[in-house]
Length: 135
Image (cartoon, rainbow, N blue to C red; front, top):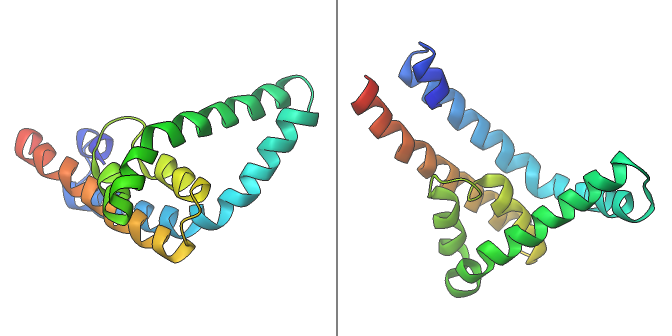
C-alpha cells in the first residue's frame, strides 16, 4: 500500500487494492497450505539440488514462524493471532500467521476470519500514518 502511495497512486485506491489483496490471501492461503507443505516436505527429502534447498528453506521458515507466533496463539487464541497479523513489522504478516494457524490445527473458517480481520487492521495501521505523513 505504501509503495502505491509513494508511487503516485491515489491513497484510497492503494488502500482498496491492499484490502482486496488481504481478502484474496485470506481465502486462498488456509486451503493451499496443506498442499504447499506436502510439496516442500517431498522436495526436502527426495528432491535434488536446488529443489532440496528450497524445501529445506521452506521448512526452516515454518519452524521459525511456529516458534515466533505460538506464544501468542497459545495464550490468546484468535485474538492473539489477529494481533500478530495486525502488527506491521516483518515476519508477522498473513503468510506467517496462516502457516502458524495451519501448523497448530486452527479450523479453516477461523483462520480465514483471523486473516481478514488482522490483515485489514494492518492495512489501516499503515494507511493512517502514511496519509498523514505523505498526503
